[in-house]
Structure formats: C-alpha cells, structure tokens
Length: 266
Image 1 (tube, rainbow, N blue to C red):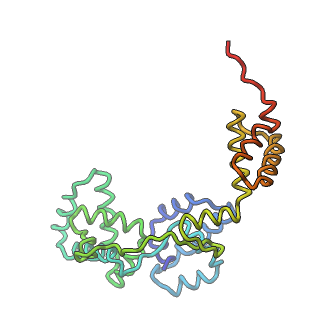
Image 2 (spheres, helix red, strand yellow):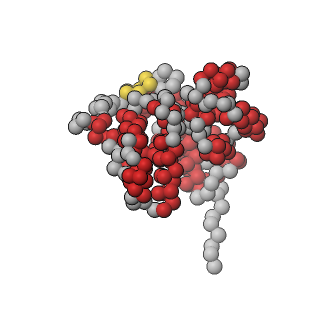
Image 3 (tube, rainbow, N blue to C red):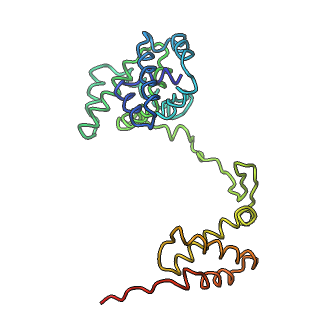
C-alpha cells in the first residue's frame, strides 16, 4: 500500500521529499534506482507487480526511507478521509458546466486557487474502478491540501459527522505513574526524585559543583579546573552531601583561593 501511494505521487514531489531527508550518498543513489524501477511499472494499482519488485530489494532499508519521506496511505475508514471521498463524489455528480462555475467561484488567492483546481481535477480524473483505494493512496499531504480546497467549496464537514454532537476526545486520567525504557517504574515527583538520588546522585552533584564553582570564579571552567571539581566531590561525599560542605569545598578550592582579581577599568 505504501509503494502504491508512492507510485501515484507526482514525480517532482517524490524527488523533493527524497532530497529533503538526511541520507548517506549510497542510500540516496540506491533509493533513486529503486524508485525509478517502481515508477516504471505499467499499472500502479497492480499489487502483484509491486510485490514482485518489493521482494527483490532490501525491504527494511526501503521501508525506513519511505517512513523518513512520510509516505503513508490513509485508512479508508477515517472519518476525515470519508468526508473527502464524499466531497469528490458530490463534485462528480455535478454537470461539467456547473462544476466549472463552482470551481471558478473559489474565493482564494490566485496561486492557491490554481493549485486547488489542479488537485481537484487530479482527484476527479482517478479511474472509477477501485476509486476509494486510489484516492487514499494519493498520500496524506496531498489529501490534506485537497481537504482545504473542498472546505473552501463548502463540501468539507467532517468534524460534525465525526462527533455526532458528542465530545471527540476520550477522557484519560492523568497520573504521575510512568515506566522508563529500562523497566523502572516511577510514581509521581517523589518517585522521580528518589530514582535520581539513587542512580545519578554523583552525576547531579558534579554538575552542581561545576555550576556553582563557575559562578564563584566568574568565568567558565577550564580543563585544569577538573581536579578542583573532583576534590570538592570527594569532600562532599565524606560529609554525606551536606550543602554547607559544598560551599566549604568551593571557597577553599585552589581556583577560588588563587583567582585573579578583575582588571580595574581606567
């Protein structure tokens, strides 16, 4: 489905998406070759042709690139998509002369109006066979632009249909409980504090020492200040991380005791 969506995209849009993602040169050349092969298939909606090509290349590599390019088909049961589908079908039922008048009535800037005319004509010209599937495979970005055009024509009313007068949002209880990627469970701010103190106390202490020593010296720390940081850290641990031990360690440190006075400005 993702590959079919890619085939139905404009070639310039496909190239734009490819060059706008960060790929290694080898991956970029490889993707260009694969895309060229896929775009040359006779029938974009022939699943067997696409599957045959897809199995002949590195599937994981291709999927990662397509995900980076944000090429994904929409689910056809999405209410937003259903509203787009119904809007295009409504336009298809209008006689050509009336349709042209309706499109010309779009109250948009000239460049946006021209873009809408192109998008709508592109959707209207999709084959009637399996139309819904082919419409969904235009891609989310194209459909989003198409939805804006239909809304300007007064044919996009998906929020009202989706809600049916009810709240769209499911109420979810917000709690302070969370599970970290390593499986650690935390319960609220107290749990976070306990976890930090248990696992990262020395790291946090060193960062605090560096910040306060830098403030006391009135300058950024240099590599030669690291010995003083470690000396203060050693003193702090012996005093069970008492705050007054931190202050004492800073004011008795070598950099603080022998810091140069600021130059008098004449």
